[in-house]
Amino acid sequence: MTELPIVAVVVVNWNRRDDTLACLASLQRSDYPRLDVIVVDNGSSDGSAAAIRAGFPRATTLEAGDNLGFVEGCNRGIDAARRRSAAYALLLNNDTEIAPDCVRLLVEAAESSPEIGVVGPTICYCDRPQIVWSAGGTIDWHHGRTRMLGLDQRDEGQFGQLSRPVDFVSGCALLAKMNVVNHVGPLDRRFFAYYEETEWCVRIKRAGFTILHVPRAKVWHKTPPASAPPSFLVHYYMTRNRLLFLAVSGAGLRPRLYTLAFEYPRTLASWTLRRRWRGWRAHRAVTIRAVRDYLAGRFGRAAWLEPRGSSQC
Image (cartoon, rainbow, N blue to C red; front, side, top):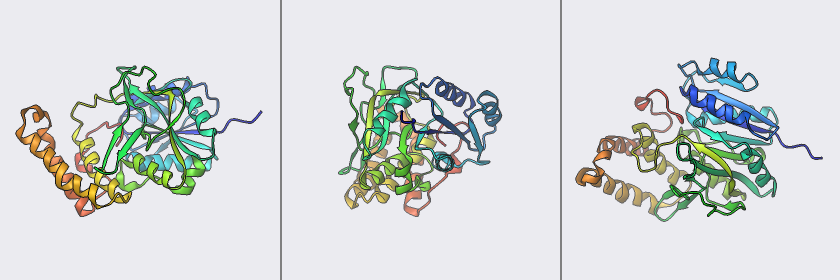
């Protein structure tokens, strides 16, 4: 009987001790027998590292000593996975919990063809476990937009039983083959957090590999509704990094101009003039700063925005 491949699970934590402990507990319930759990703690001040070591001594806890962001935290975890000769790296947000059969279903899908580079599960809201947050993603290259497939739909089997190609899967739960990672290189540290997995998936597809959504594999994510205004920190990185993604991925001038000269100004005007968007008005200054930083080439960490306790940053 062929031995199952080792899956290194990379979990990045920054001051989210309780969420991370719950995530690790869900991994302990996995029916996949060859998991190597690696937690990268980004300089937490809430006792996360000690609590993780005490509660999950078989996991490897790497202390970065500072907030490296989701991207560089994942890259450090991937480096550790490489040293352990893992066949796969599963990037997993620390504010998620996985179904017991999730890893097994992802690996089965990935092992079905050498042309498959990345697979991802159906991700639902933790507080609304039948409502989809992501069933893979699609890219509108004409307008420079990305979109989560199935967002806010009830999961009623509409995605089928078989794996299906998508443009990208969320870095919230992303299984990548290590030989593919070695071929295309690490996540781009300029993103710090958000859009990094989208650019990675584009890079992987252009290298000749397939990205798949595996409908039967399930993960639950502790994230607010898509309609709720995001934190200033999330909004900043999403705004700046969309532009960075379009530039790095070679999307062309049209979508970049559309975003910069039309969509962002129109959005700012709507927040200012239309009462229905008044809840977003406080985000105007963050939008302007994000665009300025992109134009000035200021990427990576925006420490001036950081609250304590982001799951991603």
